[in-house]
Length: 506
Image (cartoon, rainbow, N blue to C red; front, side, top):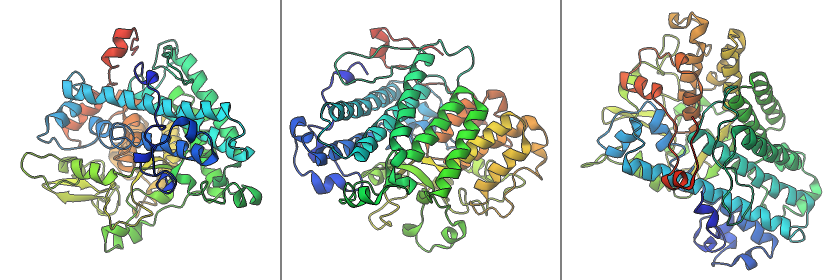
């Protein structure tokens, strides 16, 4: 971060080589531009805003490492492969030189994206007359503040505590950067940092009040400020519902259980009323005759997703390779897949579309995850998506809170709502399973549902670190995976951060 904050930015010198967010830059930026030119027009600000999302899709950030590669390998039910890097990540050997190089870059690119957001925020405030429409300015600023909070929150949890206890608030966490300048941001306590993060998030929610995703944008705004379609496809950008869902995540991190569940329920109710999501049709997906028409990432349920233009090349390298001489692939362990979490007494593996019924396909004696299937013939509406927040996570937050409070009825209602849209004929979980006769096992059941629902996404990784070790009660689970779950620890701070004087409180 120290080095990153000294880099003059981001978007300004490289926009010409970037791919589009919603194809916007592709249509509007054909040459490299200076920041003076970029921030001299409304379309320049639009380009710059898109550039923030593009930087977030970097292979060392949400495009790969923060979602389906490093984070997922660290906790997920994957088979051991011949790759030394895979093995080191699965064994949590953070001191391994190759792994340390990866995690240090994960830190740097996260702060680089934050620098991008801060640069655009700075220019937006410095040039209030360029983006003259009030609603459009609010939407731009709301998106940027929401993204700044989103990235910081993930950095905080990857390189620090996954959930706060009452004695943790005075420990120090990752720097929260709110300015665009050359001076490194100070390291603050969790209490101070969360104050900054929640200030950004609350302001973002207020600014996004007139977001078109809510269905209440004025006809005048849609006809004028949105005449070019820039404010369409809101599910591919930080938006009102995504910001409110992030608030639910933060409240859960704080351990404010009732508030987290209430916030999650509010997102569900508001998003449903606005028609902002639609559950996938599990039956239709299983009957599809071509992989190219299956909504593998459940895009219709996404409140926020990134469009990552080179997703296919990255997943071809790590997931969809042919396992030729010396190669490895991210494959779900067949021992895990055959028992837990896809085949408990009350879960038929032939039904759940998140498992062997659809999304896990037998390959090389293991199971290949198809969530990030991509190719040139894949339906364009589904292509290149990395889910950032899905509506199902809000139900999982409600279920997790209920499990913590040993409220079996509410927990089962929330889990059943998700599972009923995953092809399971009897979606009420655990009712006939003797392994779940005790309330003490509720959280382990919720954690297994996180694994099923969010394989290849960061949500499962954070849940695995958040849910107490005593509740990681796995049924018929592979011993390697059990060890991986129990020993999961934060990534270490980069060496240069420690040498500068940062300290990692755990």
